Picture 1 (tube, rainbow, N blue to C red):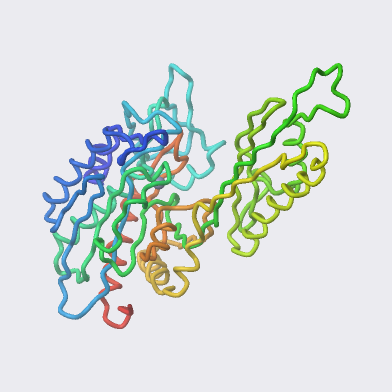
Picture 2 (cartoon, rainbow, N blue to C red; picture 1 turned 180 degrees about the horizontal axis):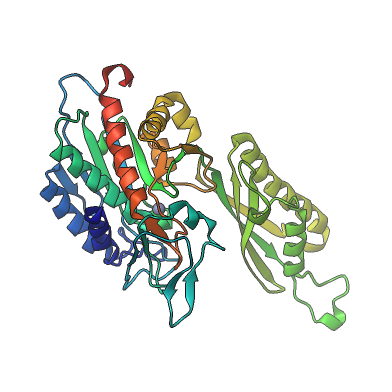
Length: 417
Ligand SMILES: [Zn+2]
């Protein structure tokens, strides 16, 4: 266990925060620091064909050790951390044999990780927790995933009696800013399917995510002296307000769960002359997703019609852009890749928690690029903030899942392409 903890800590102390405002890949040069270290480490443990491209995408191979033909599988994680919270000067704290009580992360600032608020903590009584010092995020998202993949590969290399097919490993930059899959060379990776190790709680296995779009709605107005405004002024902020009121009530992120979709207004800036409203649209169901986009167009037309005479031209314009799609469509035709992961968990005594993701993963983009890619737990909780933590035992379990998936895939009769 100490080995996995040491490896994890050696990754999280390297700052790899990504930056959505940068146009380069990787978005921050500091991501190279960990990328170069990972390349060396993959070579040191005996991985073959270790490559890093000019955008810092890392790939490596563990060759098959069986005679018969076996599908090539891949395991993928990202090495950047979220720009939502400080990712520099991370000082991990180890809490051995967790007693189920409050954990003081930072006495000076009175920052406490408490099971009365974060109930998940109670799942890990008696285990070794790795937490922050209350001033940064931890980076278990997704350096836990990288730790698990490297450790599993090392284990397979050191235990050649465990039979497996060819395994490909991929580490990416910039997942947290939605670009992890953008420059991922699926053909070069050359796997039949893969798994991202990027989920949370032990047992999580995900192959359904949202269909996603973003909309930018611009409202034009007419500014006139308020004393003489009757019948003349058009206040674009009030029209934006009307627009928001036309959205179905109760369908916001804070009022929905499970398979329920939503509209999420996340940005609004305005003056009388112009107001810009930005929202995201999410739905697991493709038809409902299309309906939601149509509704934006419909409301736009309705308002334009109302002001057509007074304004002379369209007062509202809506630009809608698709962002990503539900991977279910690409994974269901090869459902055995989920079944193998589920079976692997059951065989090592983990209860699979299969549930729809209320978001997207790199795997959803990769699935549409031709690499079906469900998501498996990496073990951490409370991502993107100071309460982030990961139990070392959960990382160990993830290592076992990777090894078991490799084993099951190599068993001839489950080796369907
Ligand atoms: Zn992640």
